[in-house]
Length: 227
Image (tube, rainbow, N blue to C red):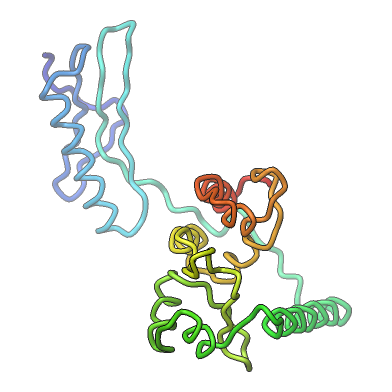
C-alpha cells in the first residue's frame, strides 16, 4: 500500500484535522476502509462545530490502479449578494385582495369538510372505537388515527378511516410520517385520485387492502414525484 500523500488541493489543516490525502492501490485494503470511516466521522464533527456543510471525496482512478481519499474541506457559505433579491415594496391592493379572497375560500372549504356527516367529534369517534376521548387524542398525536383540525369545531375524525373490522387502517402511522405528520396532507392524499393507484383514491386502495401500493404512491408524492 502506498504511503499517504499531500493533497493537491492545498487545503490547510483545520482544528487539528488531517491535511493529507490517503492513496492506495486497487482494490481497497482494510487500512483504506478505516480511513474512509475516520474521514466520515471527522466530517460529522467538523460540520456540527462550524454549523454548515463540509465534504471529502473518494476518488477512484482505475487507469492508475489507485484510489484516494481527500481531506475534509469546508464548503463556502452562499452569500446573499450572489443572488440579490429586488425589493418590490408592499404588495399592491389587487394582490392583497386576491390573497385575502384565497384565504377566505380556504377557510370556507375547511369548514365544509369538517361539517360533513362523515366527520365525528373526538367523543363520538371514541365511542365508536370503544375507548376514551383521551386515548383517541393520544392516537391522533401519534398518527395512529386521522384527525383534522376544524378550528372552531376542534378536531374531527373521518369515520371512513376504519377498516371492515372497525379498526383504523394500519397504514395511517406510515402515511403521517411520510407527510411530515400533517393530518391535512394525509387527508388530501386519501380523498384524491392518483395515477400511481390506477386512478383510485388512496382511501379506496386501502379499502381494497392494497396497502403496499398506497405507501409507494405516498412515498412518491412526499419526495415530489408528479402524479
